[in-house]
Image 1 (cartoon, one colour):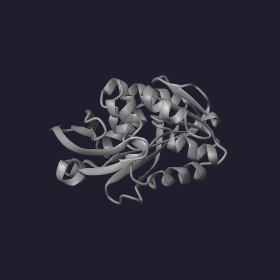
Image 2 (cartoon, rainbow, N blue to C red; image 1 turned 90 degrees about the vertical axis):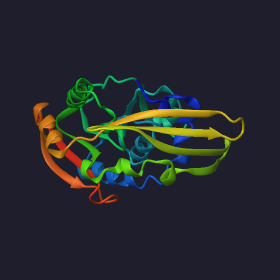
Image 3 (cartoon, rainbow, N blue to C red; image 1 turned 45 degrees about the vertical axis):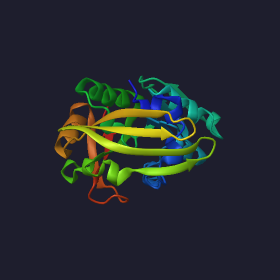
Image 4 (spheres, rainbow, N blue to C red; image 1 turned 180 degrees about the horizontal axis):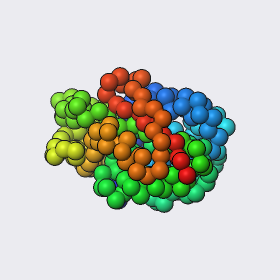
Length: 240
């Protein structure tokens, strides 16, 4: 099940205008070029920003996401016909050079069975020797300490929507799981919408062990250049 933040039409439409500059995605564009990826599977593609960045550079991209409202936003964007969009969780066997999860995608897969299914599905989608790349936050940095109203409250004007007030609150910290709530208030009609999200903070050795157990070879664990010391960027290759 996708969180309301991504599957409620009114909230999904806010994702792009309320998200700060996506400079973080340039890291993954560079990795795609580094590994020579021509066919890419974007797992948890959301509103399609990254998939379209790759398509602009000539890649053949398939985007998969369980949130129908986010897929609808992606399909409505200019150039969206260059990407194959799949609403669901099944990962297609497409002999991809690269399977990738950006942002919160890997951490949002909290259940062990779902995580295993994703790693198996990504390996099936990849050609032998293809790359799996994703990021997770470093648990010791306790990113959730900044997910509170004082640190996140904002009021912004969104074209076509009007003034929107929003903020985050922590609901529960039971490591390795952290649950937070996004509250969004629409000034135009006073509607208040909330979305609860849970992320799993995996340790580096846990992730590496999971990858090896699912048929990957971990080639490198990098520091996120835009958030040094705060995130791991895992690069692994499919061995079969």
